[in-house]
Length: 124
Image 1 (cartoon, rainbow, N blue to C red):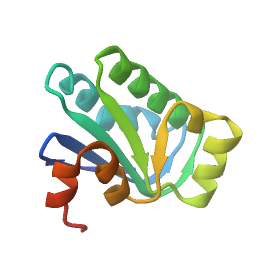
Image 2: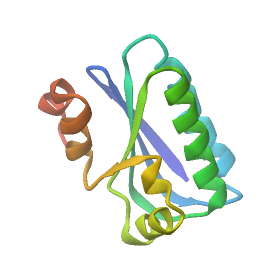
Image 3: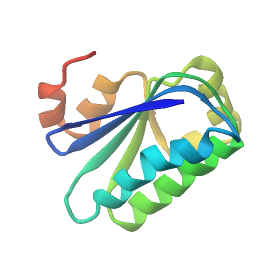
């Protein structure tokens, strides 16, 4: 599992690549959770780009739930973008889509949470 971080205006985009399972969930947490903490009091928002994640186990879902709880506690916002069909199906079946807002693309997520960031966003 690999991660890349990009900040645009008041949004931090964490892009993840690879499988998120029991073995890689700790690295996923290490890549994501510090950004949840840094959003406190700074009116920052967080987009998790899952376009290149082809599998996510319950261990990965747990990391996302911890991140969502942390953001909610800090009055911040976290959204997910570009879920692959298999990962999206896991979210739907587990009803995680009722807790975490999902968008078809990173641009759609940015348009919804920060038009200023969307205007500056350049896809890689």
